Image 1 (tube, rainbow, N blue to C red):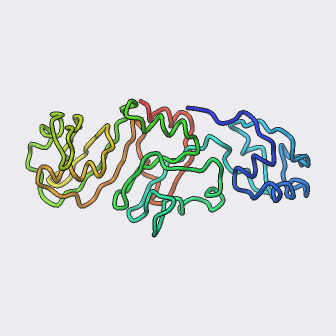
Image 2: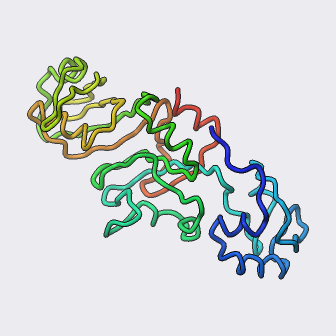
Image 3: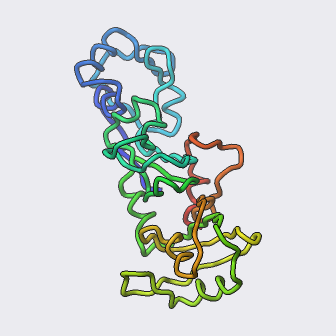
Length: 245
């Protein structure tokens, strides 16, 4: 896991976390509303060490500090929301606390799930980590739970695993994908690429239509059964390491 800054001026830290402009957070500090280990900090220039326990030791207006830089989230994306900062309609960022949307660096999705796909979505403000995960060289597996319109025909595993399947309007075959039939109209598919609507197009290529698609695993990190649609949680380093397992 890559790291953010080791220390920041207090006013810059709070401003970067979305608490307001530099002037606004200086006013908070001077009014004694920022406490570290129970003691007010009144010097906005004070350097603050960015440690994993900082959010447990610092309060702003009586509330725990928001997670410091290096934030990584796992969100259970619902159907109907878009992985975008700009498109119309409900956005995944609207599922996060409002102040988090003003953070600098910004929180961004690690790759995208299309509007009609649900499930495990990672978000982070760590650009280096984001690019490490989405890099084709990382070869990170992503598993999808697929519900189909028509019964499986029986040869999907061989077709998807051959490494020769060509999608329409593409000139390079897909890398081999893992396939596991669950029932007549349901299967798990694990891919290491991220082409546009890839899983949907794979089933279209074998004459079927995806009616529901949910990502339930990235690497060895599985979507917990107790994380409801629209909910998120902060990942610890042990959980994040599973992405690369």
